[in-house]
Every structure is written in structure tokens, then in C-alpha cells.
Image (tube, rainbow, N blue to C red):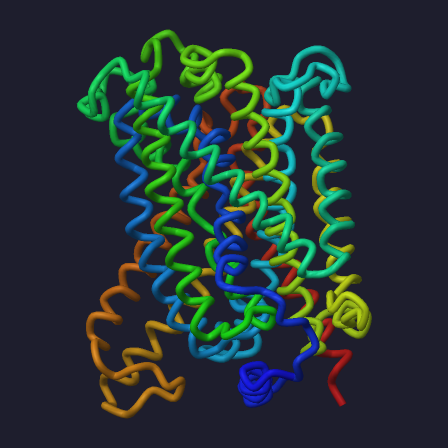
Length: 495
């Protein structure tokens, strides 16, 4: 074992664990894990109609607002990733900052959020593949995910994507990382081509972002702006994936924090340019296509059929890459919790294959649960919004279970004047505390905005009133289910 690996194994031993997973990831692969999770090309494609439908061109300004809040969260996570480079980062950090019980809930919610995120990203294939070839529309003729045939076909394509992702993930981190890195290269190339095409075909200037004439009718300007903010809230999370793979990354204490920050920064700039370019290049701001079709409507108008198909192909590759990245992160959270013996079936779920260096049982479990979540919603045309909002709500809540305990610890250190028990740098601690406060406040506001029961967001057709409270109900059920599982498992482990 190289000296650097020995040093990292010693650091891991100090944190209470043996080196079981294989350290095969370098700096770019670590960055790719987070960038693929956010998958700005895919998510902006998917979410653009949501933001534009409520806010019109002015929704552009929700992008930097959400970024500033999430960047504060990312800085807090980067600080923790440097000091506690362990798989299952959210679970580990919350447990060590607060208590094992609170950490368990944070890990449980992160696991559920990531499992549902696998489902949410996998159904994005429905927005891409039928446009490339009609043969991908297996269930009827209408590929629109808000229609019955489209929703059913989304489940089928999503399931096939999850199966392929599970098989590759089980083959080992080196293979899954290769696919993820290839997907990131494809996504970056696609982003560059798309941004260039949009700006070269601009029909109006950047002043379009101040246009308030397209706000959603029937809503107040503030309400429409907050509803449009969901687009950015739904996109900017998962940047902690690099930390989830800390035990598989060379020099993780140095690499993972940089990867967290860099993936969010690049996602912000790339996504912002795509949104701005689409607004500037769109043939019409008022015809309705931007609020229903979104960016593909602009691409069709400014490119030939071949160029459009190439761009859609890069998006499809990005979706598959993101599915692998999210599934890998979820399996590492499950592995980390199982390794501590706090999950049912811990022995099997914590087992690492000596051949591939991968927790195969945990990976398969995540794949099965993600596919099952899709089939539970089979035939539901509210599938997309329900899955996405639920994944975001539980994940943002889990993030708060890290940033709030971290802030409380900081206050203790500042009042007492004692050195941090976690070894955090003393210089700039007031500045770090301010960033931490911003992370907590913004996290709470984003979570509240996600859970807010709005008919226009969750039941626009008016035929499914129960969907209005679905994200909040899902979070409550997740918390209640977690409390029950935790209580049962503690009883089993009691002497």
C-alpha cells in the first residue's frame, strides 16, 4: 500500500473504521460525482418550464439567489469533509456534531432523498429518448409526462435506466466512475455547444431578465416569483456526493472539499448561462412554449434536426451518468449506516465484495427501492412534480440536521474561547459563523418554499387535491418511519 494510502487508512482508523472500500478515485472523478448528481444540463432542461411558467423571464434572478444560499451550505460541508472524510457524510457529520439519534435521522432522510432522486432523474429519460426516436415511446403515442401514456412510459424507461445503473455500479467504483466521468465530459461539451448556440442566435438582450409581463396570472408577483424559485431549489442539491465517496478518493481530506465547492460553482455558471441564453434566443416569450416545452422549443428553433439530436444525446448520456452518481452516493450512505449496525440487515448491507470493492447488497437495495418508487406512482400524471418535490424536501431537511448542529457548536466554541474539538481553524471563525448562519436561514426558507401547499404547483389540473400536501406528508411519513425503524433497531441492539 502506498504511503499516502497508509496515511489515509490511519486517519480512517482514528475515525473508527477500517479501509474496506477501494481508493480508486482521483480529483476529477471526485468532482464528477458531485457535478453528475446536480447534472445541471439535465435538471435545467427538465425544470425550465416550471420556473418560466410561474415567473416568466424574471425567474432568472431566482438562480443566483438560491445559489448564494446553497453555496453557504457547500462551504460548511467542505469544512466538514476536510476534517471527517468518511463515507455516509451527512449521517457521520450529524452524528458527531449532535448525537447518534439525530445523525441517524439525518442519514435516514438522506438515504430516502437520494433513493427518490434516482427515480426523479431516471424518469428524465422520458423527456429525451422519445424525441430522439419514436420507438422509445412504448406505452401509447403521447410522450408528455403530464399525460397518462407519457407517465406510464416514463416509469418503464426509468426502470430500465435504474437496472443498467445498478449493474454498472455493482461492477466496482472504477467502472462506475469511468461512466460518470465520461458523462461529465459529454455534459460539459453539450453545455458549451448549447450555450454557444443560444447566444449566437440571441434575439434580445440581457434586459429580458427584467421582463415582468409573463408572470403567472392569478398569483401575486411575490407568489409567482417564489413559485418560480422552485426550479433552482430543485436543481442545486447533491453537491455533497464527493464527500459520500471520501473513503474511495485519494487524499480525500484535500480533494473532497474542493470538489464540493467546484461542482456547485460550475453548475451555477453553466446553468445560469443556459437559462439566460434560452431567454435571449427564444422565438417568443408569450406564445406558451417556454412554459410547456421549455429549452427543447428553443433548440428546435435555432438548430437543424441533426444538431438538436446531438444535443439531446448528450443530455441522455448526462441522465444516465447522473443516475449512477446518485445511486452510488445513496449506497454509500446505506453502507455507512449499516457498518455501524444501526440498519436492519446491517451485516449483509455492510458487506463489501472483495472482488469489486463495492457494497453490492447496498447498491442493489437502492436500485430496487428506486424502481419500486416509480412503480408505486405508475400511471400518475403528477409523477414528476411529486417525486422531485419529495426528494428535495427530505434532503434539505437532512442538510439542516448538519448545518444547525454545526452552528450550535460554533457558538459554544466562540463563547468559551476554547479550541474546536473538531480541529477547525480558529482564524476567520466569525466569518465562518456568518456563512453558517446564512446556510441555516436559507436552508429553512428553501425547505418552507418547497413544502408550501400550492395548488398551482402540485395540482394544476385541479383533479388531485391530495397532491397539494404531498411533499409535506412525504416528509412526515419519512420522519415517522425513521423513528419507528430506529426504535426497533435500538431495541434489538439493547443488551
